[in-house]
Amino acid sequence: MTNSPLTTITAKPAPEETQSCWSCGTMRAAHFCEACGKVQPPAPVDYFTFFELPRKLNLDVVALAKDFYELSRKLHPDLNARAGSQEQEWSLQQSSLLNDAHRTLKDPIKRTEYLLKLEGVELEEQSKSATEQARSTGQVKKQIVPPDLLEEVFDLNLQLEELRMHKKMGEDDPALIEEIGRHKLELEEKHEALLDELQAYWKTWDELIQREQNGQPVSELERRQARDKMVDLLNRRNYIRNLVRDVGEALDE
Ligand SMILES: [Zn+2]
Image (cartoon, rainbow, N blue to C red; front, side, top):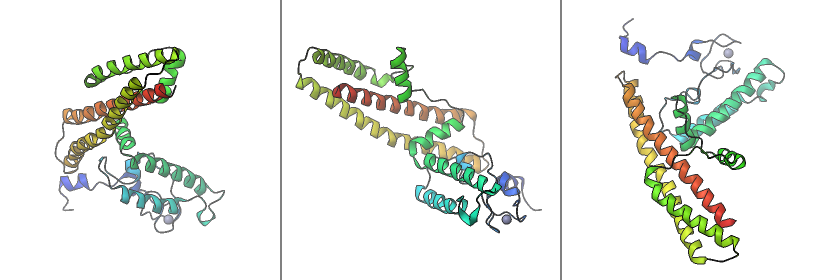
């Protein structure tokens, strides 16, 4: 063998590639056999690995969709009357994994959140269900106001309080409603702009992954810094999204 240690590392096959087909003994693809077409037992892999992708955040969604449709066809439980067999069960499992993986990876926010989860990061619980639970139990929701929004949120809350008071008294205040509506629009624009900002961080992250693939060292500090920036941004984005929803509800009440 003339392989240098470096090429041995980068050319290491994924675990599923080392297995052979349960039916005919040859195996050319991860999820099904290219020789006989039989679906293979699902391997416990993450969504990136499922599509044989590196853990990078910039990804070609058109190529992803193409892979998705091709795999959908090949893994479909009804194909070749797989009914009743063990293979059909694997087909169902593989198809469900395929759908989840595609749904998660095609969406820029879901993709980033998923990657961060794989990296061991827990995002702040700011979901709608958490908000509703907090309301029903009367508990204060664990939510940190992003520092750059403190002032704005403070003003907005005062205005919302005023609005509720007016409504209770049966008074109409078109100027206040207009002011709040303007606030809401600004927040929606901010929410939109954060996606562009997030994509700038993807670049930083992907460069680290590329360096790793090239066999260059990447420190834990570098990884953490890249992760922290994305976490901070996603938390800020979720906060704004919830705020927009709350304002919308207050205006509709
Ligand atoms: Zn086979």
